Image (tube, rainbow over all chains, first blue to last red; front, side, top):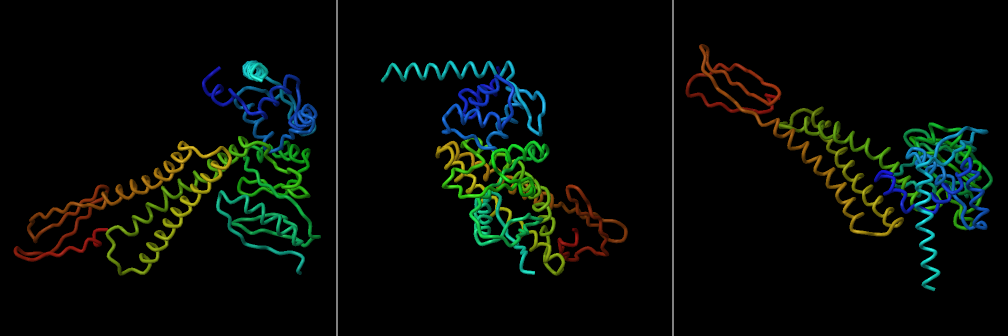
Length: 104
Length: 260
């Protein structure tokens, strides 16, 4: 993993994290928006400008890749590099959670 | 007649929020925004007064992949109206404050848009400024002693443009700074970045000035030949040779603009 990826994505924004989490299965932008809304009980509604910008940035950086197009919607899937970044983030968040529990 | 109206409006580059508010206010007064055409004509059509939220995105990649880009926004309930110089105009019924209607849901992506605007809109302006306006200004004013109306007009036009650009750059730097401060909190690093950016532009201007003025510094050589003297004026990139019918002991006064 090069320095640029580390600098930009570790740690990453909540939006970025949810995108990678969802893209372990093929999905399109709006599909991710709906899934995240469902997962967070409607608390997090990702907006289209944010979604579009994040997806194209992540595709350019090789974290996700374009799979196919369906009814004008681009379907993406996480790459090996994306999984690597996601795992790092998961470990970081797990540690955060563990420490929070211990300190309470 | 009366069902359409066109308004000329000027918004500086970081003022897109004022632009969004303007379009919302117009809709609330019963003017439906149709399109914007160069250089800033806003076309409206009469409609029922309504509360509508307008939002601008700047994403040239989105405009290149328009179908898919517009689809994403329309899936989220945003109607695409038009594109203008890299900006895409969207709207949604209802009030933004009440319903959390935004096209960006986090500060990182909001700042990313500002960066795209900066690269897409500001850098070309800076290049135009450095490569055309400043050289023109210096070429028009260097060694010029007055006397030509065309010359006067050009000098003033370019001087005016140069000042306008510098003021615009300063305003833009301040607006970008305030925006970034609001989004990610104030820090000495951010302040340094904007002061630095503006300093670079000023340094660029000064650099071009020095370059041009130094070019004007000429050396003159007087040599004797059979019918008098030859005065040779040499510039860095051009030389002018003029012959004068002079005798020893004559006083010579040079009008430097002759050598231009």
